[in-house]
Structures are given as structure tokens and as C-alpha cells.
Length: 292
Length: 331
Image (cartoon, rainbow over all chains, first blue to last red; front, side, top):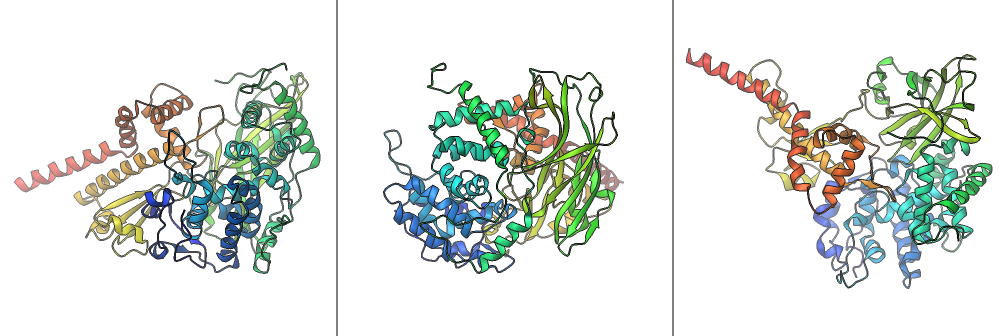
């Protein structure tokens, strides 16, 4: 397993996807050898503004703690790291949609974490251990760090990261639902987490079955009307981002606080939770006998 | 064709944007000129103001429901009309209720707030009429048939593919990755926010040729060159979009929401003719990920790209000019 590159930049930057390939070597994807960092630094564009948010050290220290704490069970690192990465790297969605930032984080700052978290287990068919390239540069819901950041952004309930922990504790949920548009509606995301938390849905097939059913019903139903959300106040997020300048390192044992935004309206979340529970009763789920 | 298990309106809602204003960081407002939006293109471009210090934009809307929406014995009640803005890149979903202009009418209006922090480039705007049908709340009764494009960056309201052309010395560019392509006259990068053509200024004269004005043979050659670049771009963008498709759990591939989706919608009818674009997308995806058929499809993809790039026309004009030149030199 590799360690961090010899040269780790002090600040985050932007690494164009077209510039990534020379560093995404077969040796790296197998977790055998990492680039030195110096050559990569040459193709990175710096952020136009100098901002405390782009300091690498707090992120580096987070991923190191995660690798230590979860050395016995790496999938559990997601639920721990997701809210803490989000509270450390305070971004607007506009900034977070820039894939170059995530390319840089994965390739220049913490390639060792990507390998540690995503190196495949050897199987009879594929005895060779390898990381899929999309974990370094790929769609937002697949890339190692952007998937964690977006999971936190989409599942947090205002400033409360607890639903994020619940959602990330279920790999199937973040694997299948994160790419789907349905959780862009906050009350829907919160309702899903509640069903998970209460144990009404659990395994991958159930999560899949339910999300298919929600999507299908959504073709004729407008969830925005059934369960209205409140408009968000963008100033609250801006304030939280500005506070990054003076924020201490995120807590390791307690959950940090997110931006001071209002939670999704309780009535809406409750209404959708019971509606989805009903849908799930009748949804076809592979491996489940209906009418049990 | 979708089927619905309840009564709906058959025709789509028509949507117009009636004004756009930007709220600036100092609290003042900048009313955008009407050139910022186009009903024909169904697109809005905030970039027309040339500002980067805006915080949010207010888009005023007017929607007309199809006939039958306001009849007294309609099978629905609690009618409301909703404008919904979605952005696949930032996962933002914002909705705003519109209000009925006049009792008994079919025109609804209102406005939608678009925050700069929430979008990188393009968002998509649709309007839904929703009511209670057969005791079920939240039923969608009618919607707009084509989403409006809300482009937060572009300075021209067009919905189609927009290119960024950048000139750079590949050998000396600060983008060091370009050095690997130092012997190419241009390359296409589809991984950026919008597809970008980098033209290599190390090829002497290429910029002069591209900047040619006038009607001589130079300009015809330039058009041919541009058509060749455009063919490359369309092909690269198509492959990029197909390679990145998201697949719904339990379903087929879904159209990307950004410009990649626009490109696919435009090219697919030429790639797999005679079927609905949704079906064409499924077929192409199956061929790419399945065992066979992907190689055979390349000719069709190339054909779709060549058509979009107007290559035949450009070639025709060059040949005509060359013939003319030869004739004149023989005199």
C-alpha cells in the first residue's frame, strides 16, 4: 500500500481532468507506487483567491485519522469522514460542482486514502487488487471525496449532520440514491433516512426497490406539492463559509455543526415518510415474497 | 408515450420569461435587457450583463395552461401551478408557486429566485400544473413540453452546444499538459465545463487563417478547417456523453441534464434513426456496454457529427473557389 506523495501541496488547487491521466498510472491504481508530486504540481491551477478554506493540512489530518480509526473496517470510514470533510471544506454547491477540485484532492493531496478506501478485495475472478480510476476522477457520486461531500450536503438536515451518518452507514443508499435526482428534494432525502433509521428498510435490494418505486410514483406525483420545502437563505451558508477563517479543527468524537440553515419542514418529512412506507409495502423487491 | 391512470390535460403548458434582474452584492439591482432571454430558443443568459458580482437573479415568469384547465366541471381540484428549477451538476431543486392572474383565466405568473452560489453553469426550468384527482393529492395534470435553459454564465441565450475556443502555444502554455500534444494543430477537451477546442499557435499562420475575413479562398479554407474542428468536437462530445451516462436503479440510462444531454438529443436521431430519442439512447448504451454493435455504430456517429458541422457545405465552397482560381490562372 502506498503512502502520501513525497511532495504534498500546502493548498488545494484545480487539476483539469484532461491533465490527470499521466499520473493515473497502473502502478497507482494497483496501490503499488505513487507519483512524486512535483510534476503534478506543475499542471495545477491555483485558486484565484487566497482563502483559509484551501489549506490542505486540516484535510490531510482528517484522512489520516480516518485511516487509523477505521483500519479494521474501512467502509465505516464513510459515515465518519463525510460530515467532517463537509464541515472542514466549506464550499458552495457551485464550487463543489467543479470536478477539478476533487481531482486535485484525490491525486495530489490524499491518493493514499483513495487506495486505502477503495482497493478491491481479491476474488477468484479478479485476483488482482485494483482501484477504479473513477475513484480519482469520475462522476460526483463515484469519486472518492466528492461522493462524501455531496452525501453530507444532500442528507444534512440544516445544521444537523446526524442523518448523514445514518445515510452513509448504508453503502447501498449512497451508492444508488446519490446519483438519483429524487434526493435533490430535501424532505425526500430526510424521509429516506428516517425509514432507514427506523429499520423499515435495510438491505440493498430494499433500498433499490424503494427508490425505483419512489421514482415511478414521482412520474405522476409532484413531491414539491405533497411535501413543500422552505426556500433556503443563502446568507446563512455564506456566513458559515466565512467562519472557516477562524474555525478550529472539526471534532473527532462529536459531530460538527453544519451551516445554520433551517431544517426541512417537519410536516413534510413526516408526510413523505409515511407515504414512502406505504409505497414500500407494495413495491416489488427482489428476493422478498409479497404478501408475507 | 406515457400513460396516466387519471384524467389529465392533453396539451402542454406554455411558458414565457417576462423579465430578468440581477441582485448585486451591494444590494442594488440590474435589470437585464430583453436580449438576455429568447422565447424561440427557450433560453435565458445571465452573462449578458457582463457581471460577476451578482448574488441572485429574479426571473419573472408567465405560464399559460392549455384549454380545459379552468372549466368548472374539471376532474381535479386544488389546482396549483409550480415553476421548478433543477440543476443536475449541483443537485439543486428550487420551486416557486405561481399565482392565477385573473379568476377564471388560464394565465399564471410569478417569479423564481436563482442563486449564483447554487449553479455552475446551466439549470433547467419547467412548469407543472398540479391538483387533487380522484382524491389523490399532488397529481401532475400538465407540464411544459420542453424545459427552458437558464444559463448563469453564457452571454447569449441559446440552448444548443456552445464551444469555447482557446488559443495557446502548446509548447509553452502554462497548461503543461498541452505539451504532450505539441505536434497537433488542435485538440478537443470535453472534460471541461463546456467543450473546449485548444488551437495550437505553434503551427505558424494558423491563427491568421482562422481570423481571416473577406471572401477569398482563404476564408473558404478557414470554413473547411472550422468544419473539421467542429466534426471533431461533435464526435468527442458524443463519446464523452455516452461514456458518462448515469443509469437509474432498475431502469435504463438517463439523459444528462447539462449540455451533454442537449448534444445527445440532437445527434441521436441521426445515429439511430426512426425511434424516439429515449429508445435511441437505450440502444446506444446497450451497444456500448454490451458485446456487439458498438463498432458498427461508429459510422453513424461520424455521420451525425459531419452533418452538424456543415462539412459538406464547407467542402463544396472550397472546391468551387479552387475551380475558380484554376480557371483564372489559365486565362
